[in-house]
Image 1 (cartoon, rainbow, N blue to C red):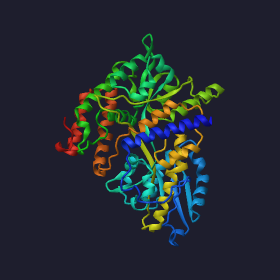
Image 2: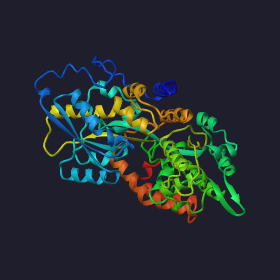
Image 3: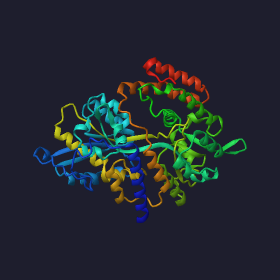
Length: 491
């Protein structure tokens, strides 16, 4: 097992290193800025921390959800290790649920008494910047800390000139298939993992994977959760591979008025008309689509995550053990990570979810040294061993060098699919470029169009209540109203 673990570790480091060289070049200004040593336990021999002010007792409060199945089990251990690393500092972690974390944080922010550190997705920081309580850490985190992270992933927490967080991980949102069904449909999934596939190839593949008994579909080629706001996931994940990696183009023009957007809508509608997806797709929620996958009702499912490989294995173990908590009617399934198909000759631009740690201040101006201490705590959680344990639990690779190094000491599951490991790392390197140039004002307007126009119209399109042209016209009209004729893409 140790030999296999070393092979997987080397594979992860190699693929991520290639991705970093290709698209995640470190900022030249950060190189050599500090000469402090990065030690194995993710600490720094920081020569600045020698005065009395740096050695004062201080407590850092942290609000954290269950990021992984075992994440919260480590809180006592991590708090102890942090205190051993910095004897004058105490890490006070408050666990919370995914259901409560956002509401609890918002209430605390509104009251002016948020925690020092919270776990927040990079796409959610706009609203906290507006409160004035989210701290720009670019002047409190050392350049060594920041240089540890893959630049593109760290940039997801940049808005304008400010840096507002450290990433815990980057997870690719994609699709995944049933290995046995893929092979039965004649799909070379290993080649697809390495080289990707076009929309035309994908369309034919899911036709081949659709199985009927008479007029009844027994297994669909592809199912995506599209109930409620999850419909936005389907569109947002696929649109990136259609020449629109972000809702604004490089000139800050609203991108979804491009003719490619109309062609994409026509292509997605065609998958339903082919019979490869359910006609009632708009009623499929996240739970139902996963149950459909585990019960053999679909060959490929989305939104897909790397950790679904683990979830499928756990359900397989329950089936083998005769455990009644296995999904009812489920079959043994091996989950295969697959890239989203590309459209119109465009390259892969993976949709990434970048989540991590942000720093808040209260109503009173915090002491500068306290903010430096908070930065140390953020980096302790985002880098090194904590990063390795967190990412290993999610079946993904770390996005910082110290995390990748620490992977050598983390026990990787013996039965983990090595092809999935390689593909996940490759897709992380293809995550679309961060856009710190998109202002909060532009982002808010685009979100309003998504909530009020795109999501309901896309659900209507999936239900065959409107045409792709009608949806496109509605989105274009809303974009002109929000950004003006000069603020939209025309091609």
